[in-house]
Image (spheres, one colour):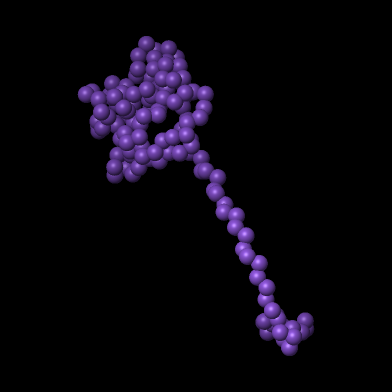
Length: 139
């Protein structure tokens, strides 16, 4: 995702922005803007059940969702949704061995502006400093 933002822990880590998906695993996370982080002891998903309990891992769930990268490792095809999964990759019944979520700083946008050319007129009576003067006395 090229553009994402996770809010403060005081607000339960809401996903405030998420767009610009690219990659080969598919987008199993596209409809989570506004969703809060749900845990075993703090059920903040919009499901009647506690998705963190039923899916065996805390996550940003939308009705127990299409992904859980905090689930269990169940050695591949598992026949259930308690494993770590990314539905658009191998389905929700395939437990992934590992996942890695990384944050990379965007390249800064450097403004390139050209300063206007200025001309300074020096009167002919101006004297330039003597090269033998101490540096502190030069102007």
